[in-house]
Every structure is written in C-alpha cells, then in structure tokens.
Image (tube, rainbow, N blue to C red; front, side, top):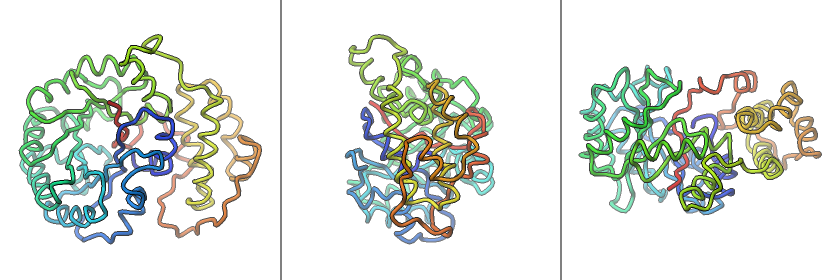
Length: 351
C-alpha cells in the first residue's frame, strides 16, 4: 500500500506472525529500464534473499501499461532473485489511472493479458508471476474477461479486491463477486477487501469460497489480525471477533518501527509516519485514540518519541532531505478518513 505499508512496516508486522507472504508497494514502470537501485530501495528485502527479517517472502509488484517495458523491467528485477513478481491492475488512484496504470486497465482485458504474458516470458520459470485486480474499472462488465486474460497470460495466482475502481474503498466489499471470478478461472484466487476483524475474514472466506486472504489496512489497524485469523481457522480461537493484540504488545512494535523511520526517513517527515500508523490503530484500540490526541500536534521526532516511549530514539545517521524515500506528510496522513485512502496493494497474505 503505497505510502503506508512500506518495507519498515512490513518488517514490523511480519514479526508478529501469521503472515505467509507479502507483496510490495508498486514500482511504477513508464518508458525506461529502471536501475537496480530503484527495485532495492522500494523492496530492500531483495538484499536479504527476498524475505523480511522474520523470514517472510516478499513478492515485488510492478505497475504500468507497456508490455515490452514491463517485461524488460521484470527481467532485470528477476536478476535480484525476488520471491515472485506481482502485477498491479487494481490501484484506483487518479494520478496513476490518468497515466494508464492500475484499475483503469481493466477496461482493456486484451492489454492486461498481453502484459501478463510478456512478463511471464521475460522471467525464469522459477519466478512466480501473479496479479491483483479489482472487480472492474467503472463497472463489472469485463471482470471475467480480465480474470481469464490474466490466467491465459500465465499467472499462477490472482488476488481480487471485491470492489470496482468506482467503488473506491467505501463499504461493502462484494465478496460474492470474488466467488464468480474464482469459479471462472483455474488458478488460485485470493480474496481481498474490507477485512478488519476475524469475523470479517470468516465471512469473506465463506462468501468468496477462497482458501486464502490478503490483508492490508485491517492488519495495519490490528497487527495481530493474521494470527487471530489463523487461530480461528484452526479452531483454537474463542470467538470470531477475538480481542486484538494487547496494547502493551503494540507499543514495542511502534517503537521498533519508529527507530527504523528515524534512520531512513527525512527528519521533517518522521513524526508523520508514526502518526499515520497510530491513526489506523485508533480503529481497534481505545488507547490509540487517547495517545493520538496527546501527540497529534507534535511534529518534532524527539518530542514524539519521548512522549510515547520515554526516550528519543536518536538516529545514528539521519537521512538528508533529498533522500530517495517518498515520505508521508503528517498534515494530510493523519486527518484523512480511513475509508478514503488511495492505497490499493493490500499486501499481507494469510492462508
């Protein structure tokens, strides 16, 4: 999820457990062959055998509309030995769609199929190729055409977000329509969209008929969600809407995350990154709401860390303001409604 679930938060959340695989934020491909440093900056797990420090594999995601250029970039990416390559046909962001990327391509199933086939031909057989799509762009008319094109192009897995681009992120997600896609193709289909609790996960699996879920904002709001879903499916959970991970366990996760932020993000954006996560945690934790109100006006990283963790977490070498990271502006990240986010790549898969 671009601007939210980056490599630092992936590292933090996969330490909690329950996640089988991650998908990175999209790497935008336009009209040039990207240098290797672009891939490793967005997916630094490529420097660690394609896995987070907790050992969870990460599939790198590409976004674009030029089959040949995507194929060339996929071939270069494959040289870095990723755990797989994913193709984004789901992003609803207006800027991305204006440049023929993401969900707008769902109006062109022939092109979708060409992209998948070109990437599949360009990378070694050992590298899995998967894709993510929504139910459509403006409507669902070409939903099955796109799913079948993705399968015919050689993808081995398809994640389906249960809304069209026009639906955005407004509830509900139409999990029953994911079932329609699943029945139309022979590859594995993973269900995604509007899963915030164990109860949501159970209903999503039942309505979609899928064996696996992709979690995104739900796990950002509740870091223990994947573990709880796994326990419920194993029959060891007390109920469908089990209590979230204790707040006393979340605070050390936030501290570890902020320590990474202080090392890797430009100073003036550091507070915004932490408050952005805290904003999501408010959905599941009363303690997060109280904490958010105490720190929402703090923009100095030292003051924020002292207030939350009792120490400043000074970075060893703070990044320069020209650092390649694309930071989050606290003034917009913390005041955006949870249902109106522009991130799409919900990126943690729990079987």
